[in-house]
Structure formats: C-alpha cells, structure tokens
Image (cartoon, rainbow over all chains, first blue to last red; front, side):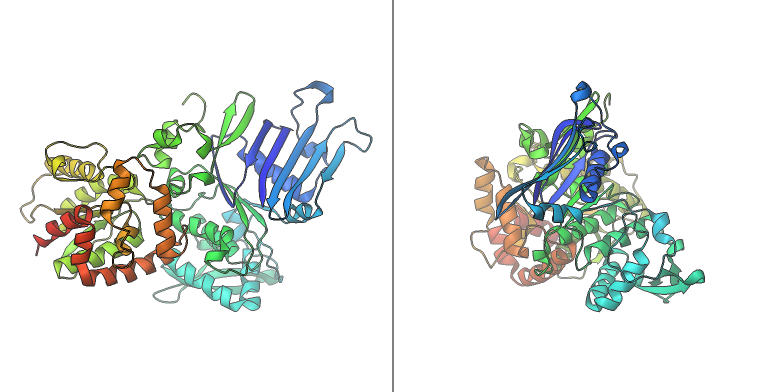
Length: 328
Length: 210
C-alpha cells in the first residue's frame, strides 16, 4: 500500500507530504493543492518525465532547484519507494527515475485519476470490449456492456445496486446508434420506459460511473476521484461512500479481489459528515501564501476537544479544522 | 398511526419503525422525511425543527419519533427535567421541539404532534446486541462515558460485532437493522431492562399513546 506521496517544488506543493490510507478524503479550499496532487499521481502513473512543461515547477531555490515526486509504500514484504526527479541541468534532460522496488512502479502505473464528466458520459462511444474506464467516464457504455458479457453476475449486482441508488430505474440496457456507436439507457420501474443517457441528470450519470467503477473485477490499484460530490445529491452521498468502501475494503464484499486505494477530493460538508467514525481518512489541504501543505485530521492537536459533538462538515465550515479559503 | 421517524440513517429508521410499532402494538405508517440530510446526529437535530413544521402544517401525521445515538455525550436522566444539560442530546432535541411548538399556529383540524425520543447508548448497534451480548448494556457504556473514556473504539467494535465490519454498506446496515429489530421486538422487556434510560423512557412515552 502506498503510504505517502511526497512533493518538492511541484507547483504549489513546495515541500509537503500527502499521507495515504486505503481511503483518503482530501478537503481544502480552491488552490490548496488537491488537484495538483491528482496531477502528480497522473505523472507518476505515466512516468512522464519527458515533458517538462507538464511539471510547471516553482523554482524556489534558483537554478539548482529540482522537482521531486516520491511515493513510499509499506507492505508485509517491507518498504519501497519510487521517485521522479526533474532537474534541467542534468545531461539526460533532467529526468531521473529512482526506485528500490520494481513492484511499486507496476502498482503506480495502473493508477487512474477520475474526473467524471456527465457530458462525456452521456455521449455515444465506440463499440469496444474493455473494462478500462476512462478518466472522464467517456466510455462508460462500452465498459458496462463488456461487464454484462464477461461478468454477468457482476452486471446483475450492479443493476441491483442501481435500484437501491435510483429506485426510479430498474436496469441498464444498451443500444447501437448512428455511426455504429454505442450508448446506454436506463429502464424506468413502473413502465419499462427507456431513458437515454443524454436525458439523464448530471448527478445520475456521475453516480452510475462511480457505481460501475466499484463493480469492476480489476479496478486500478489506485483510484483517485476528483470532487466526488460533483452533481450528486446529498442523499446519495452515503451510497457514494459505500462504493468507495467496496473498492477499498473488498473483504466486506468480495474477498477474492485486492483492495484498491481510493483518494477523493470534496467540498461537501455532507460527504465529510459520513467520515465521523473514520477521522483517520481525512486529510486537510491548507494554503499558506504561495505554497500548500497536507496534514491528517487525526494529527490536529486536541482534535477530539475541538470537534466535540459537532459534525465534521460543520466543524470544517467553521474553520476550526483549517482547510478553508483565506480571509473567510 | 401516521408518524415521521428521524434517526441517524435510513437503516436506523427502519429499525426504529419496527421497535416503535412493537411498543405501540399497531402498525406505523411512516411519513417520509423531506429534509435533505446525509446522516449523523447534527443532521438529525437540524431535521427535527424542519420536519416538525412540515408535519404540523402539511400533513395529518400524529407523531414524530426521534432516535439518536448518545455517542460520548451525557445520557438523559430525570435530573435534566429541571436543569437543561447542554451536552445531552435528548435535552437538545426537547429544546428544539419546545421552541418549534411554541411558534406553531394551532390548527383546528389537528392536535399537537406527539414526540417520542429514544437514545441508544452509545449507538443503536448496542440495542441490536440485546439478548446476544450481555456486556453490551447501557450501564457499562454510561460508566465509560462518565469516566471520560472515549467510546470510539467501543462503537467500532459494536459495528464489527453486528455487521462484521466497521464500514458496513447502507444495504447491509438496513438488512441487519431490520433483522435485529424484528428479533428484539419480541422481547421488549429485556431491552427495557438493559437500556432503561435510552430505551426505557422511550418505551414509556410510546406506551402512553396506545
């Protein structure tokens, strides 16, 4: 399991470390490094040291400055690290990859940052056999159709869960449309009316993408979900949390699958409230002038006294936990 | 009887409906709550005032049943009747109810909405263990609360005992809640004995509605 992601001179993350558990929920104001951390995961997964423009470094220490992203992991077999460095003066164009364990490279290479886009999800996609859900969810129809063929039991479980999440719908069906593209529809419960993806609400589309991700037989080993609450009704956030737990704690659902590390960002106090019993999952992103830092909620001095009887969301909004915009 | 139920999750509300029906010896027709909330104590407290307004003006519901976990807070007792305890959740709900009821305009076509408040100590999963685990009794948890023991670990253990995990899905929570509430509803006396302050007083309020 990846235990931390360390940053040095990576955009606003000048010198900080993001602690990671099986589930990590990052809260914080805009510009506090949440999306930057997601970008770092993408870089590490792709090992993209070949495109310095992507690094957008803040050279805080003059020409000797370098940018580092370092992942550390801890498993029963021991600890490992994987580091990407960029330093323009180096003869190979500034690229350094260093690791003491090739396994960590393999693990991180399957990491995926999801930023579900309802517009992309609702568009028809190519007919392909794939269980690899794209970051935007653009190929959701193809992924669900493949799941139906390759793993009909899982697809049926997905439909059952769909009925719990959205009781007005019974199941997902598919259709080939003009141009040979594929799309999906949801059948309504009372009269089996088919609602095309393009007529579904943004929240329903995003929720369906999250639900599908949680039912994939081999999801990416690290799933980062940007703004998980985007478009999702507060009453569905508990189900969204269940989907995250299905990924991260498969032993409660399907013991044969390996756990996925889930990292989510949110601005929703309602979503945060759901982690009252698991404050160890919460990381606060804090902007301090031109740099930002991450810290775990449970490391906040006197956390229990500060929280008292308040809901996490309320406490966050009040500002006592930090992670709020400056001047508010 | 038409009643709205406010608890900390839909799973808890399913269990409360079964238990309250058993005490009342009649079927409760649950009036669905309309207040948007994600779950938890604070959301439940916020919902009390908005639901009470709605029940009074927009429905013919006869009662509002509120069941919230004590967690680490003071457990309501008779002394609170004369001295409001700010860290007692029952006192807070009662205070909210009094404030809202004082502001309601009486309606000729209906009587005041009845209120019953239950307080599982430290969490509703302790009630589910009634008849299964003799250690999961209110007195023990109250001792822990009064000695300032943090109950987070005990609550997590209760969840593991009841659901097999401390991260149950809503579907699992609801399934277990219905199963356990149906079981303990057959022996309410035992639940009253083991949870006299949180369930016993709730039972007595409901019993007056029969």
